[in-house]
Image 1: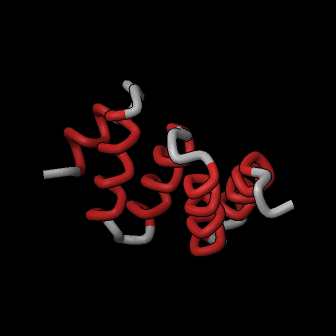
Image 2: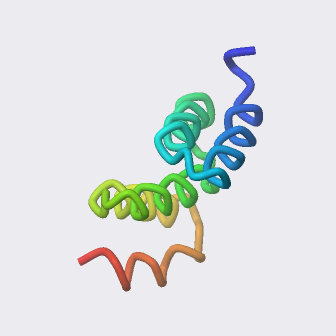
Length: 82
């Protein structure tokens, strides 16, 4: 079902766990397209982007998560986003 955000989110977690980062990022992106205010997708996609040397993309995701109310990203933004 192409509009089922939770399915993409859950599959992204699985892909991330087996280090298929590109597939995980794509699924988090799809989740965000369906549910643009999904804080956890921004946080998780940001972490994957950081782990694949996309610091700019990671910081954009973490800043969006902070804008949406996440407090857990403060440390990451301070540490990794200049």
